[in-house]
Image 1 (cartoon, rainbow, N blue to C red):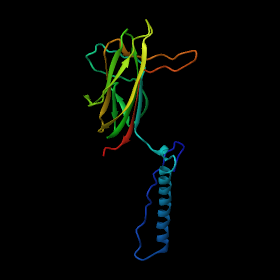
Image 2 (cartoon, rainbow, N blue to C red):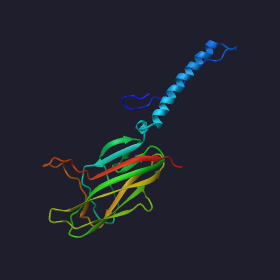
Image 3 (cartoon, rainbow, N blue to C red):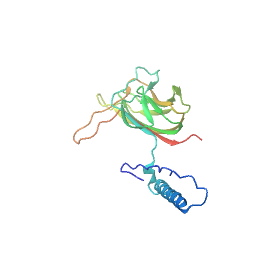
Image 4 (cartoon, rainbow, N blue to C red):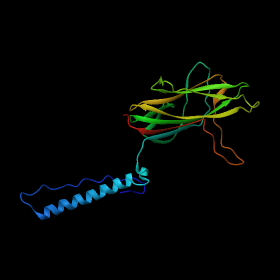
Length: 216
């Protein structure tokens, strides 16, 4: 049955007594009644799960994380991991060491991110963003984002880098989002909440991870 938190209760199988040596209507009726109740509950659960909007009863694995700090690159020859300092949602996906998005179960996972990049230089710049699994680069996972020069002194160019990616992981594996700019004047920047009108703060980075399928 469904509760107020939209969870389905798994019906408990009935405890059936051992049959008598000879046919006995009372014993038959008791067992038949218990089985009838059990199968009715089971049919209700399956009907709710596979019926319209049944997905609301599914308990899928997911994680959502964000960061509220500026992130800089000390040089252009080092790969840097995007870090996160806030867990928004977590169910089977956790954050370790600030950058390691760790899954509890094996499967195909969908990773989505958005990163607020800023270019403070007077020239066009690029940044590469790719993925690592357990510290090893994922082949063919790189993307290059291009930035226009800054608009003026104290007025940098801003852009959101975003994409989603399917990755196959084993239980306890972790994914990291790596980045490398063509100039140290490119950084990942957060912005405080604004006024006139009131508007939310801008996280420097946001990432979500959701389970897609078991590994076939």
